[in-house]
Length: 594
Image (cartoon, rainbow, N blue to C red; front, side, top):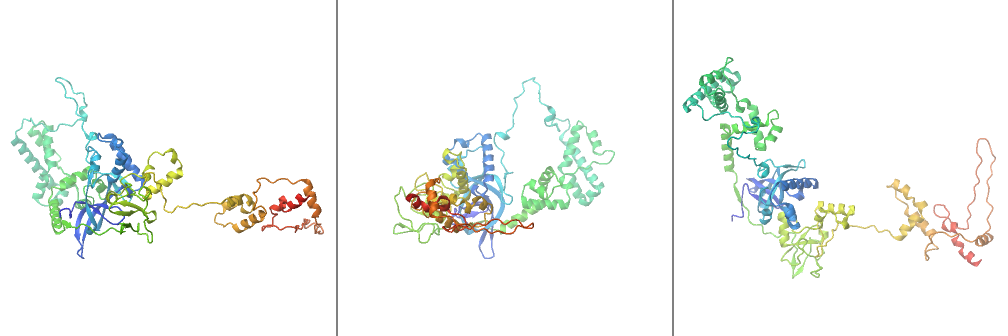
């Protein structure tokens, strides 16, 4: 009963997807909607998997700086498995609020500010325990140190000097030390000091009556007297006594100099009503984040002035009234809500019937074929082959699954128990993976959160989402060399969007090598003997070309002779002499006969 009762301030798991890890949130308010449902206003926490790789590098750098200055267990003392799981326990606080249905709560957890004096192993030893040290702004994608950091550890300890021996002089610079402003061994009695303070208050009340601005702010006498009784007046009176050696007559004369009575004001009197309203509005929005209050609401005020005003404002009736109003509003809101344990089956469960595993990842028509346990599909995290329940994990085309224990770990901590090869790419590259293409491929897998495929062995390989391989045949490679004049790769590369006429290339290749389909092509053409050439010319005498003559003139140049193309053989598609013309391969028979 108590485990299912959730209250304001609890850290809880929220489920927004059946396959993704839980969201970690802190309940700020519980509101009842018009339809009767309960909504929770929550503060968002982010995991490492939710932020960019650049910010993760900054977070690792910040953690390394903390390790160097702390005296606790450093990361070098942890095993690879502990380092891997420790990253799952780190969260990043944000100032972002959202409203979620309370029925999506799946349990409680614990989130604490990182304690630098405590060993990091303490977070691994406890279930459902997380820590944070940085604040993530999802709007501008930045990481900053939490301003509410508890300053503990050796960095914040005071250096206590050795005690001076009797008669030893103090060599420290007295100007850098605190200045003495009050002597408890004064010759005045407590009654005399109280009487002087009453005189100082009276002078302060009279000074406010003479000041025009003060008479507007405190129109009544009791308001002026209350303002004159604040700490600023008492501090001035006691400082005056100390500076005049606790001489009452001399101190009283200083309270009322020749120019009139001294008027001492603090931040409550210096601020106007509009500035006070801006401060209350900023405090409602940012809380005690004085840097943001100054930056967005009161840039003309100093940070010291804002802090002093805050602590003085807490002593006023205005603060008490607002506190009562908030308490009344809190009484009308829900303080706790009962959420029963979620018992519906997860859609990612791999259903079984008659002992045979069913569809994995919901792929229609795809069944899991039982295999040898050593070669079969094991748990992607712990490599176990036996589990009372299996869950599909990752993209459907990868057919990955997790056992019940690792599935619960995935939902709570947002990662796998054991480090996979996608984690190894963050380590120094091994000689086998020095190829930059391999490293970039691995980084894409890690960035996209893609699962790593294994077959029951730790030496699993990364499988891409949709891998393909463009295989070039030997004939295609050969055609690139033979048909250079037609293909012209250099010119084609300059115009990548113009398609290449592969039909012409194929025809020319077939025409030039029709007679050599059964024999290997020689790498170099051989010169035929002179007798073979003479025999060929005797059988095929050359025809006299038709010469077109024209009368020369001064205006037109002489026309060049047009030679008719011999038609004893066919030309290629592009009108060029084919391979047989240049090498005489179509007349090999005549050479043999001769």
